[in-house]
Length: 472
Image (cartoon, rainbow, N blue to C red; front, side):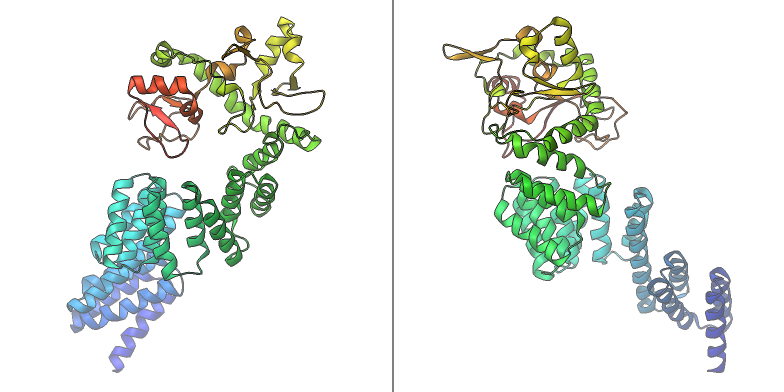
């Protein structure tokens, strides 16, 4: 016993001084000389748990667990050390994943699964990282394995639900959200994910309940405020949406898209009601939103003009049915809001088109809007849309705004190809990996002429909600 006490004491002293490698070298030599490999392996396993749980020194814990595995002769002791080593790899993978070091994170998860394939949490966390990288098929395999090993793994249920929501398999996603909430009904994250999924498939009333519940359980839950704000915008409760986006910005002034969505809610509060007067707040927010959007606008138009030849297949086959839907208030356009670029306004000034400028409120150097300047009200129908018998036509067709000319095309600025997840070069509309080059605005689905053209070309697909479609 005295000898045992001495070697334990020696290892503990070296570990406390941070001399992990010396402690392990001593352990191996002492085990070899005294033929007590399993005793020392079990002791090292305990040291590794202490380093990880109490001190959070996971890299050091990993070295200790690996030494314990190598020293073990008893399969039970070796299996316990391997499991603890696997858990530590999973924790490190999780930490690295949060820092955006995905390659290193994946390496740790693969090691965790190799060492102890039955660790459900390793499969679940690995699946989550794969999902972040849009490697959906591999991610789904990991989630299914995690739930096969541990059906009551709430985290695996919720991570799988996030993946299914991304893939627009909403009913399956809701099923897994319910599985997670059954296991942990007071988890605000689970309520948020279910609310987000329900919002995606237009279950707005139930989504609102879950967003409220998430915020009740966690009053400083930033993403829940943002998600609830988006839901309220969808429900056209713009004043409430503003309050939630404002709260998001209070908690995190740099939260992605919160400012843009706040501006949108302010603008839409009046835009959704064309007869309502425009306020000074609206004009101020509109200017600031144009400042935010101007660079993307300029980039869009430059790219659209450069690559117009690539849309020749659509233009050659497209025939406007003169229905007027794109120029007036409909169920899919709450107003006729059209962001005028500064070049439009400059052109009309040079052409002396006061008949157009009388309807333009200009933000110098930025752009402008069409609205009734005398009464400060929005139009529900474009003032230049004219009717001839049963068809419509544009009375300023020869000099109409760029936005009208280019509809329904747009370019993405996400930096990652939505089709294959490859990184896109800056300002490049081509994906070097899969060839994606063109996207069509969801409004095209409601344009009878464009819908017919897409069907003729075999590019149309039915959707449950407006979404982006791509030409490849």
